View 1 (cartoon, rainbow, N blue to C red):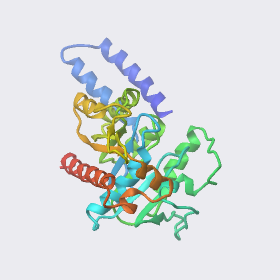
View 2: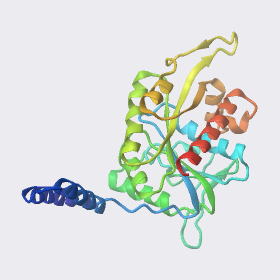
View 3: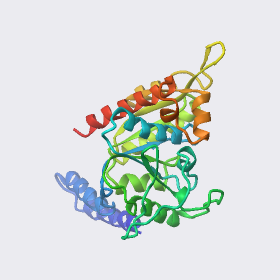
View 4: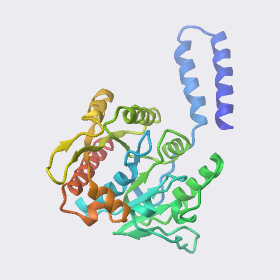
Length: 303
């Protein structure tokens, strides 16, 4: 309703001001339009106790975004154990964090009825998956989804966090807009495979964050290369260098490559992320390098 009202008044002002046009009226009109449009936008409010919010997004599902978000959060902890990191699963319809983090159960409540995150590997997590049955489909319309998202954002007792990593749902819909407009976001990490069809949607995701004035920290090229465990031959199953080229085209940073590796898939299915279960592996090192690149970009955009 706010946006509908805003658009109506916007049109009325445009018409009336143009009728009284005179020298310099275009500049005055533009200022007036910005003032009216700003009224319809929600005021950003920080999440209690949270320092920097980093969203991990993708234009398309199935590119490994949630696995990347989990290992990024653990990677941030690994490279600087003094920092407190949390993980929020904002994918209301398809929560993956409970499986990836091997967490089950309902959150306990504080005396003020705020939910206490479930923790594993030292990483506090909150997900819609903790609030519904594991196999129950979440068949909700937009208003119910927004209400659930508001609870996950505002009614969780995170304590004091330096970084909150948010695993976004795929696409560029209501959840992405709501978080971007209601919460101060330090930056967005865009995950894509090198495949052309995935890159098309990754581009849309990056452009959306630019439009809502969220800094794009950079692109991650997931499943970049497959190395045969027997002969060590490398095969670029989804193409080569697509995300790096897209980053250059968009004028954003390329944050790194994550390989297509059996160990990542197996450990994710077991709820044992590779950063924890195989810390000395090349794939775990790739996630730690990603975390370091993200930290550097946060410092750059928040100066």
